[in-house]
Image (tube, rainbow, N blue to C red; front, side, top):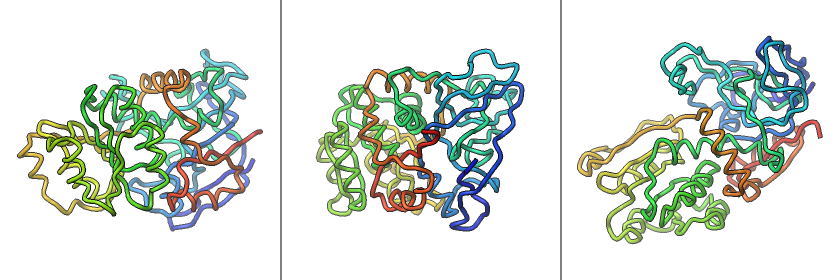
Length: 346
């Protein structure tokens, strides 16, 4: 079968290769891939700008869904032909306090699809039974492939953050996670929802408005902090979500958060912070990170997709075949599109 393989640790060392169909173990499932979303992490891997190490060679792709093709002898919950979507925690120890408490996404030995083990930019992928969730019949494969970034946003906003109905939320960075965050906090009653981004992301900012943002701020054209304070009557936002990851975004978050407020950082950024965090102390505000997701988050997000609470089609800019990967990677890198899915076995 053909697969998109990162074969080295230099920029651009990514190509389509012929690889064997994987063998499965007793508790594994061979999943026939139907759709795989392209993540910003995939772009960073292509350019080798990741914050985490990568095992090479490795088949990329961690946002995916498909149909059960074959099951191991110890698999009981699924059978051939089931429509499923897959979590990202491909390898966990199952024994540490994080795993035992249900927070297996924080297992120290965790490896994810597409960087730690082979992922789904190919026709078939081996997955543990525990990673799979059933897809309701009213969810298309293309939409289901976007479940993972929606889960990142849900974990960020609904699990680790405090969203108060009728209180403002600032979301910095109108990428896929930021745009899903807009929808989730809006569904939880936040008002107003403010989205900040750069001129480079103008199209994504317009999408944010369609998805429910009450205000958008182009940080290149106006004073973002002044605008936030104007909107919030000088109080700032009880919750600020940093979905951008760079130092300037975090500074805006720290400056914009209200007293006793909360900054939740979901955007990755390997560069050091170049400003003081003392404003957090003065405001008795908190800052926290969030990472990945677990079983209940997936079940909640699948319900939100099935019910229509999340607008998946507005998030999906492009459907492609594997041969079109390079052009599409470039478009995502340049913020020309929001999300794209690679279709397989169609």
